[in-house]
Figure (tube, rainbow, N blue to C red):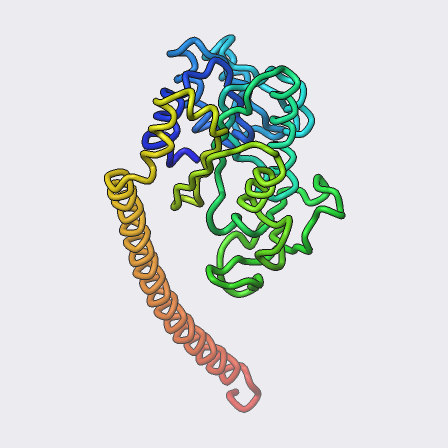
Length: 300
């Protein structure tokens, strides 16, 4: 999600003017820093939810003070208990069950307090997890809500997993993409359809995709926020976004070419060493033959 910070996330936060933010899934804390720095600048506080944080929580507490409230729990265990948020950033477990019920809990909490559903920004609404579940820990998801899954690779344009090519083979991925209750975007769409509210959903593709979700009434009350939701459809934004994606593609191609060169150099060096080893083995064999000949009875 950090890829979207300067172009989408911060502008949306500026427009929303939140006093309470929630981040679900902090990983290494890189985007958490961005969110907390924004919160300190604007007098807001951030609830960060992650059962296995990849950063020094104590150091963050020392740096950001009361702006930082950490929950070492799973999202479903805490979202219904903490204060109602104005903006929620979701980048946790990328599967239908987790995301659908995160949205449900946010909606129930807001309704109980007579507050509008928060503005929600969600990662992984594009390939590969828009229509395919992934489970960091499959046992966290009830068996009846889990897709058949295994640790194998995802190939773009292919429904089934692959053992030979693709990405994310070290994760528990749904064996097939598509169908009901499968994937992050599916969860968002199903929640919106069943909520009884009018929502606006925007999707910014690239970098695994960013979803922007807000009630229509919220956007009607906030012209600044509505402009941010419309801006991601503008030609100027899409042009600049495509340039960023192309830059990443260029860098990736360059890295792939350099990796191929390194592999070829390594293969050539390996072949040279194999040739040298074979030569040395022949010399050793020849020395052994001469030694055997000099010590045999016929040589005396």
